Length: 135
Length: 135
DNA sequence: AGTTGACTTCGAGCGCGCTCGAAGTCGCAG
DNA sequence: CTGCGACTTCGAGCGCGCTCGAAGTCAACT
Image (cartoon, rainbow over all chains, first blue to last red; front, side, top):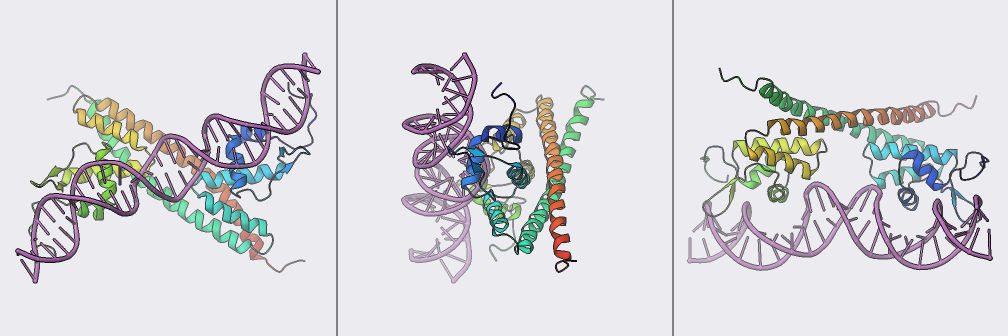
């Protein structure tokens, strides 16, 4: 409905990216100003953002890191390493490995708590499963 | 070091509870004023909090709920049901079951993201494992 | 040519979950 | 009886991660 069909070959507006990835345009700009994007998206002649394939892929990675609890500050540091180019691979690996370790620990913790919660649920279920049974 | 050894039989000060459960006295009072505790701890004649066994057990549960991401508001609602006494068991069960469902979904999601992150890690590891190998 | 609506930057505001500090009271060891 | 440290209430402040709104520019359809 918008334009006919022609697309500048893999180049999305901020609204398109937002919809595809399930975040707001505000959040996308926020990520950019916070330095979470390794390369700022290119701009049209009139200053509008155009997101390419690489931008998309990176933002998906940012979402994964966020969704697993990595703080914005740390993602920025990781992005800075990527921006710095070749030679920072060991540090990037260290960042991701440390994050992975924390996430695994947290998964374990949550799983343990969940066990206790499930036990509580089972308690209520048993109690309610035999409601009118005094004798 | 503090007193000799006598304890009023399972009755802890706020500081003792805080230390045992790994949270701050500020947080404990906050939970109380926010209505997360089913029964407010008893007080000494001079107004100081005394936590009993039951208080302890409940706070541990609150910690589990918090650690699995249940918002304070929802814990308050659950606590209200418990405070309301017998007859609210079905609703309590519903609250916990819904929470459990969300937590499981979130565990799945995080696990999936973690897979992708691990793949990235493996990529760096492979790259670094064979550092000087142009041919 | 005009209208609509998506885009831009900027700064303020918000919801959450505490954290902190002030000011005052009290328990208890020396 | 004098300290001193742990307790009390209260309200303000904070770190995080966005969210929201204002004010203006621009694209492109009719």
